[in-house]
Amino acid sequence: PILLTIWLGSYVERFAEKYSPKSLKIILVPTVTLLVVVPVMLIAVGPLGGIIGNGLSGGIDLLFKHAGILAGLLIGGFMSPLIITGMHYALLPIMINNITLNGFDFILPMMFVANMAQAGAAFGVFLRSKNKTFKSLAMSTSITALMGITEPAMYGVNMRLKKPFLAALIGAAAGGVFMSIFKVKSYVISGSAGLPGLPTFIGPTFVYSIIGLVIGFVVATIMTLVLGFKDVPVKEDTKADKPEDKKDTATLQNEVVQSPLEGQLKPLNQVNDATFSNEIMGKGTAIVPTVGRVVAPFNGKVETIFHTKHAIGLKSDQGTELLIHVGIDTVKLDGKYFTSHVQSGDLVQAGDVLVEFDIKGIQQEGYDVTTPVIVTNTNDYAQVDAKTDGTITVKETLLTVSVEEKEEGIQHEQVRKNIS
Image (tube, rainbow, N blue to C red; front, side, top):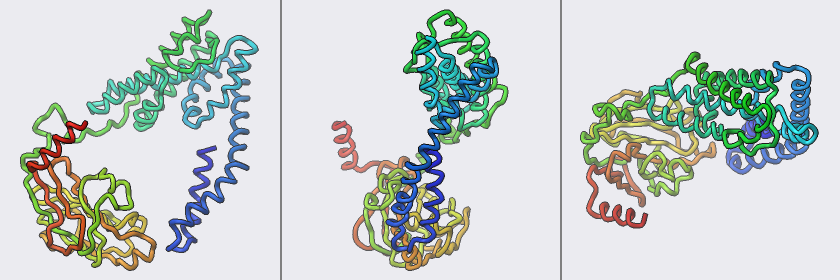
């Protein structure tokens, strides 16, 4: 129901976005979306999800009663997609009913083998990947999947790489077939579909349950190695085994960065965007421009300019990497009101015009023109100082970056460590 509701909501939101007055979009769009979608969810989508779930559970029950091996193949192989959509919860009443009436259940073993297969696929990624960081992630998520927590392995590794997820489905199907042949049973509803939940199988078919789980794990591992996958690339500056590939911070220098804009300064934590206000991209400041022109704040190179022209990344000759992001959410304008005078790769001198933009036009569309100016390689410096108050013009000092920390900065850091 949640998936269907969000899908429906995406269309309602687009409709509201299109027909709402620009000055009222921030209020009308979410309000209209909720007013339409919530009643539809409660009246139609929710019950529809229940109907689909009941039909699914009934079909699976029939499979186990009449299809034999085919039931293990289909239910084992497709259990992970059911878990992704949350439809596996519709199977719980059947499992409880089976144990109540018969004293055992055939469905829960399929959940176990699906989890073991996800663990096996992640283990296959661990064996094959050349990225040390990702190898570590694959191994740790494989272990958690063995314990019954499959989300990290399924979403963080297998689905991300696609083919390992397919390998997991194949492994689960193979283990499901074996379990259906030997009629593996569970005798209680376990709180964990992983190794801690193995006592749920204790009974005449216990040995076969262990073999089936091993088959799911091993087949998924082998299929991951056979099918292969496009590995997560290793960033050159993170290769721990090659010191020469590490970023040479010794080449960085103290630098004064001029203002690229003319306007009113404001602290970064007052910017209406958490990515900037929480300094996720780095330290810096923000400017509310009074002139729609961005100029180069130093001698350097244009690393990238977005096709929407609202943001530009620069790198100075001394190594400072700077992001100038004109406005908040202005990417949605798709370049309207912006004119670029440079391209990625261009060399620039301090004062060169980079981008021009129409302040009034952007504001009439309902967007905030506050422009964050961020040192994106903040971690390469001991200290980043920024002006955050008053007015500023181009060529005035806006930021200073320091390789060596000032004495008061060192004392401040020591106080912070003591508090920690």
